[in-house]
Amino acid sequence: MNQIFEIKDLVYSYPKAKEPTIKTISFTVKKGTIFGLLGPSGAGKSTTQKILTKLLSNYQGTITYCDKNLINYKKDYYEEIGVGFEIPVHFGKLTGRENLEYFSSFYQKRVDYVALMERVGLADALDQEVSQYSKGMKVRLNFVRALLNDPKVLFLDEPTNGLDPKNAKIVKDMIKEFRERGGTVIITTHLMGDVEELCDEVVFMNKGAITEAASPRTLKLQYGKKEVRVEYLENNELIKKIFKLENLSESDEFNACLAKDIQTIHSGETTLDDIFIKITGDASDDATTTPR
Image (cartoon, rainbow, N blue to C red; front, side, top):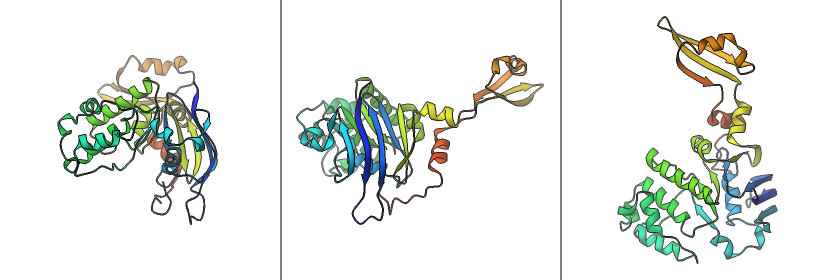
């Protein structure tokens, strides 16, 4: 699978900042994957996204997109990417249709935004002023806007934040379908359930540096306990047992448990929330002093 982005020794400092927000990070993003850029507020992940979307320049290091230096791309780059910002920005006095028609006019290639609005459950709100939209409706409209030019790459910042489970599932299904069509997604989110469900690879950032890079499955195996927990009923009493995974099939006691009235059985894998806390440590939320 070919890489679509290669980032080498990226460093970025905001004007008047005492130290770099991005501190010599390197990673690659493979084409046709969902890539998670994770970390606490102030880690530098949103700054990294802004650099990759060419909203920030004057960085040190090298970024290549499709084997071409990102610096050499001009307006043609924006024909290939879609961006969903964390805080939706819309024209409140315009309708949803008018907003999408306006933003569609920026691109040479356009999609059927009416069909997208139907998919995210906003068909009946197309001709309603966006100022009357709820927060969740604005989030879904924001997601549709990122897809207006049929991009090759999606940059999404907290794409399901503020959505109920039903609408969050619709958005996540559309993200996965985008990947299945060959698209690439770079996502930042604090919702580790979304990460586990969506991401093929992730990097954790903390204080401007990369602290871990792997697939969610690899991280869960690395940080989890190699054990199985079993709960079963015996004489109306709930019994709890823990068994090591090593040579588990040879354990007579475990095999005997399988014949019991089992209530639950779980491996000792940890959650991505626990991994997030372990990797990022006790980093404080310094978003007010350090850009994300």
